[in-house]
Length: 184
Image: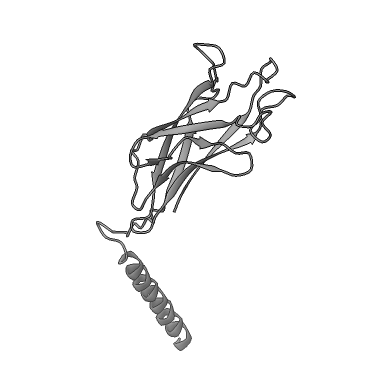
């Protein structure tokens, strides 16, 4: 008999303890709750070249330099106090074909591919004309601390000029200009 009473008391104690555990577990729920949301906003930059093929043409006139414009849209956010940013360009593939124009090794002294820049604020445009290079990037635009573009982006363009040298052989020549953007 003592053993059955002990078992009953043990069972009651177990049920009672389980009940307390359930009550304390349900005590963590309420009609409302909160969480803290945290975000780290970093410096960022992106660029979209909106002129996929820039045709350089020599019109009107004979032996007038070839000109054309490449348009782009940029988005940027720089660090508040010490941030900087830049848009640069490099000729990553020179004009192909013997006897035609060349950025790296022009056929005549004074031949060059140059450009000038137009950009909307908060960018500062390059001081041109700038001679394009195959060996290094050259400046298109720069940004200071706390620069912020519009959500849809801001506009810019590069107006190219290629010397129209009579020494060039006739034909179609292509080169690739690669634009990069950075922000800190």
